[in-house]
Structure formats: structure tokens, C-alpha cells
Length: 510
Image 1: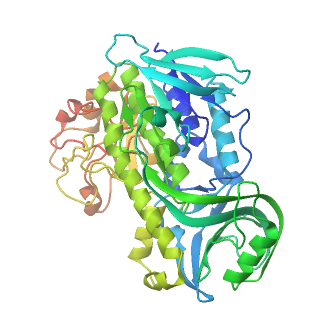
Image 2: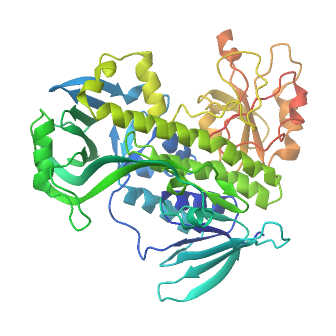
Image 3: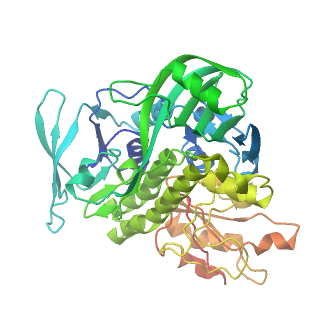
């Protein structure tokens, strides 16, 4: 059994790391310098891709029950709606943007890791760090931890994951540049109750000569309000008053509404920054420790959660000696392009919605453009094409290795092994192992039973399915792919695939 991986930070990123590793049998130690979990809402949007992945962990049902599904986003300018983004076009059973307090998201994750026997050590801060990756010590990461009573503890770990947030001690110790910029605008934020005609099925973006204002429905008539260019001068000793937020709303919206019962407010400025490296020796970074950006599009928390879902299965295989340590290099090869794209898109969106004159290109957008925007915002469009783990052997079609595979009707071996049963592919995905999806050519002599038997040496690690028989021949033209719940072990599927003429291409789920 490997020694405990040290996770620094118990926000959504750190909690996801602890959840994924512990589920895969890797012991973890998770610390957080805060004495208690935060209770404010903070990040409030959970995207369809994140919900798809959390469903495989049995967590999405609780989140949807507690949250408010936003079915669309309405953008206004000049006293009228100029664009409505329809999330029902998203290719997921979660065809909405779920609005839920980050406090609730963290509680759900925290409850799940407690079921795995993981206890968060609170009031414990990382204050010192060193590593010797050339030594033969299985725990080359050395740290100094300060406890709430002032006691200092020296500890060590085989690996350390920095999920500390924007003020990462690990990033500062490594002197990794946090490259990017801080925007000039000041912003006001408030969580409050709104009476009036503002519908709760949509989030609402108002663009005017005065600046940007967004309202995001949390359910039961409660909304998150964010506005640029507040009316008063922000300071560290004050917070926006409800009267100021009401005045900002009246200045920028034509829809009647009255505010009351504000539970939280704050000032903030937008930083758009990321690191160039996610792995330095045995130190790994993810979430806000690695990338921060505008809240436009509700991307940040989702990206951090998916960072850890990409990393954890790889780290688990390395620690179990089931894969070479070079597998971890793919974390640094796959996630930074996603981070850069998120930064670029959120910066662009912030610029567009910040001024009414920029809304022209949005007006009248429909059809395929709507679908593309919804897919990118929901993160369904994230792909890992042309990456080391995504080797494409497909002979044609639109689905390539590294893409998110559709929820196809498939057939697989029944539990007793005596027959075959048809299911939806997503229902077979399990975070503890891989799923090999095979499309056999019409002339292949191999049978499903042959394939199943050939995969027996890997049955604990890899499941097998093939598309269910289709009445339309075009349905069989889909190239082969795997959408693991974990991802793919390099080369793991290749030898068994010789039972047919067409090899499987491998794609990623997170």
C-alpha cells in the first residue's frame, strides 16, 4: 500500500482529488488552513460535463435536487433581449446549467469522501516545502505544517497536490510565474431575493453604457448579482449595500424587480492568469492554484474539478505500479490547452458583455451557432484529440480518439457471463476501470464471445461493449472509441484488439 498523497486545500478541487484517489484505493491526507468550511455561495454554476462525470460517482442526483436548472441565458441591450442561448440543445441528459451554491457542492463532495474514510484536517496550513526527486526515498516530498495551536509538524509524502486556490504556497515556493493580467474594472457581487418579473429559468446578462450586470437564479427567487463599475468606491472595509445593488439594477435593466434579504455581498476584481507547468517533480497543481479567470461562463470550479478527474486515475495507476510514471506527463499535456481556451473564452465573453456596442454579432444567432456556443460553455466540447493517449485508428466518421463519445446503445456480457444484454453506454461507465467500445467491421470473423474471452486477462481493469445491432447501416459507421470513466492506460487494449481487424481508438472522459 503506498503512503498517503498529501492534498493541500479542501475546496472543490482538493475534495475531488481526495474522492477520486480514495475511490481508487489510494490513501490520502487532505488539509485546509481554514478552521471550518466556507458557507458563502461563491461559484454557483455546475456545467453539463461536470454533472456527466459526477453521475458516474453517484453524486449528480443530489446536486440536481438541491440546485436550480437554468435552461437558457438571456442577453439584453438597448432595453430589449438581443440573444437567448438555449441549453436544451446540449448533448447531455443534463441539458442545463445547474445553479447551486459552492457550499452545497463542497458539502456533497465532503460527505462522499467521509464515506471513503477520509477526514479533512482543518486549521492546518502548509508553511514549508522541499523535495528531492533524485533520492530513492519513496516519500521525497518534505513539508512543514502549522496547526491551529501554532504547533509545527514535519511530514512527508510520495506526492503533493496543490489545490490551495489562487494564493498557492506551492506555486510561490516553486516560483512558477502566474502569467496573465488583472482587469481594471471593479465588480460588486450580492446574493439576494428578487421579487418581480425576472424569470428563474434563465440567467440574465444586461449590457449597457454603464457596464455589465448579470443575474443568476439560485431557486426560490434568490439570485446572484454581479455588476461591473459599481456606484461607490470599493474598499476592503466595506461591502456593497443592497440599496446600491438595487440602484445598479434600475440603471441597467428594463425588467421591473425589487431586492430584499441579501445574505452576502462583496467587491472583487477579475484576474486572468495561469501557470505554464502543472507538474514539477512530485508536486502537482490544479484548480485555482493553476488557473484563475473571469466568472463569465461559470467555468472555473468546473475546470478545477475536471483537472482532478484527469489527474487522479493516472496517479493511482502509477502508485499501484500498473503504469509508468511517464503517464503523469499527460496531465500536463492535456489540461493546459483546456485552461488556455477557458481563459481566452472568458476574457472574450467579459469584453463582449461589458459594452452594449459589442452585442451586435450576438443578435439573431441561431441553429448550429447556438449549439456550438452551448457545447463550449457546457464544456461538452472539450476534447483531447492529437494527444499522446488519443491514438486514432479510425477509418472514417466524425468521432475521433480523444472526443467525448455519445451515449450509444451498446451490448455487453451479462453479469452471469452466459448471455448478452443491451444498455446505454454511459450506464456502464465506472470510475474504477476502463470501458473498451469495439466496432467490428462487417467482414470480421470475430464474434462478441471471442472478444470477451480475449479480454479476460484484463477483466478487472477493462470492460468490453460493442454498439447494439442497428437497423440503419449508417449507424455502424461510427469510428471505434473509448470514453473511460477513468481514462486509458497506454497500450492496455492493443493486444486483445487483435481478434478483429479494426483497432479501438481511445478517447477521454475528463
